[in-house]
Length: 404
Image (cartoon, rainbow, N blue to C red; front, side, top):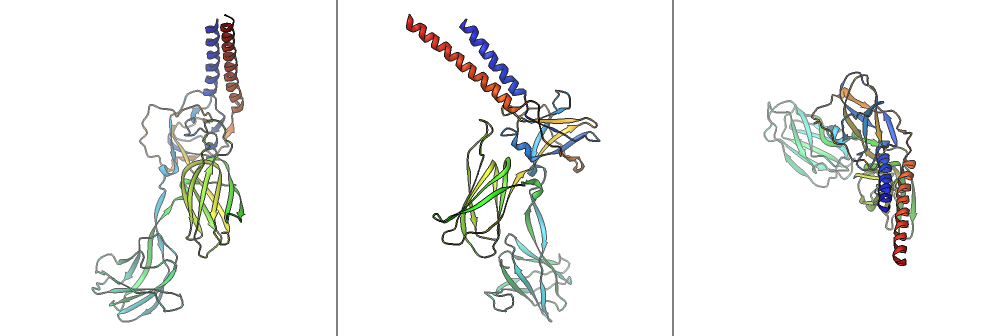
């Protein structure tokens, strides 16, 4: 009799678990397409807040059927380049032009991360002994300079009409006077530029509706900024803008964490990242996709005035589902089940998706009729029932043993 009860209880638990495993809390209607083929579907960032830890519970179905459509997930950095090399022009003024001497002035140069300045010149004529003397100036309107750097130039006829002056010669935050000597009478600089690797923000989603407040701890001499994200999401990077152009050198700490996890599968670990406020009015820190809906920033002010925080911005990675869709069919994406693992499909994706096959799932993420809370109550109710019954049976066995 007891064995039969145990078997029935386990059957009940397995049945409830099976119902839980097949349920989804949210659905998303995907846009219809006009031609069949592979598509990169940009998914809404809100999807992170309903999916399990590795987004393994996403399923794509043809609407009205139980037939799964195979897909793979890619983040923005896997679809587009995260960093792009960009050519940036530098302003300059021609101060004098003489027979064998040519002088220019570069106003205050604020760039830090560049490899070299590239100078274009005319005419295309060989100059074997040309040199450039570089004078970083103490003051833009003064000829007082710190030190002189002499650079030999390699100017060859029929070669590329450019030469470079390496990083560090042109100093950050200072105006620079450059005198070219032993040059041709018609020598002239036509442009100055440098190559900079900039971050491609199109691979991220900028989080909106961040809420934060800044308080001062006068005893510990720290600024404490507490803030929240609109929902639980992986954070790729954060930017903190200071409303100040003066010199400062502060250290701080950034903590990202999830407050009030949705279920036992959510991670409530606090990740801590060191911050250095010592250059420019904006700092950017890569936080490597930490799941969070709260953040805490602490800045050690020492005996200085607190830094005025102008803005705080968080970025989440874009998420794409790549799938082969058929024209005219309606597809629906289902998500929201912490017990599901990522699907394994019998296909090998090795295909470049055309740019015109990138579409956005701009429909609103909708809760399904099957409510997540009801599923949880059913599951934990079944577990509680099993515990009570098993405890009762154990107590009955102990009582019988005592009587004997």
